[in-house]
Image (cartoon, rainbow, N blue to C red):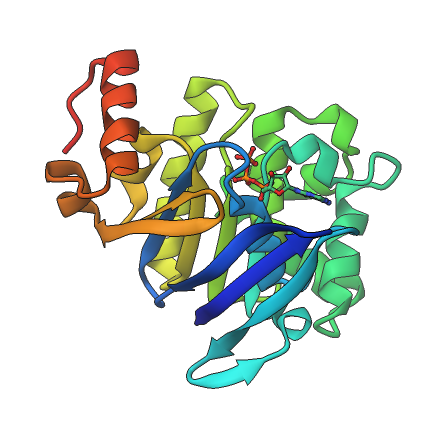
Length: 252
Ligand SMILES: Nc1ncnc2c1ncn2[C@@H]1O[C@H](COP(=O)(O)OP(=O)(O)OP(=O)(O)O)[C@@H](O)[C@H]1O
């Protein structure tokens, strides 16, 4: 699927300018950039979920060459995993009910919905998925909630996944587990993934291609090996230098 010529504005301030990118089935595109660069708004525009005050001035989403209404892709073609999972669940509602609501969009109800929910939770690493369905979000850790959000994102069997900083706010061990899971699921299901991150280690680990955003534009794009071996844009070089200064670790 492609996002073509996206321009977003709030008042007379342009937040995202003429942005195009392509997510290919079976490939992970890493979208890298500093805070406030417009990454999350780009993700939300792909789902037709812009926040109040932000308007789409230009741009379209196409799937296999046909223009599509982003709101119609949501869930069915395009799953979403966001950062800070705790804020993404309704605290008053059990995990089972979260699944029931999502699966009802597919016409699944009752025992059939429960079987499907349990299978999805099993796929995202829960040994006893039926026990998870009875829990409320407050009874679960951040890592458990993130794996549950991944299971919900996959509930309608989408071909593409938008993962917006999926490991932010999680401790390092849990981060590594979520990334392993994302990699396994993307491979197994042949998903096309847009992985938004400001973390170069995450990119090095999962991305096939990298796009770098700055000030609402894409300023660099390259296969991941080329990006790390010879970053072309000054912003890419600065991000790489900052990462090496902070972590001192060799990237591929
Ligand atoms: N509802 C809104 N109204 C006005 N401006 C907004 C709104 N939401 C976001 N912005 C502005 O749009 C810009 C891009 O925000 P966005 O959240 O997409 O950045 P980001 O790259 O995802 O950053 P982060 O990594 O911090 O999530 C920021 O300058 C932000 O202040």
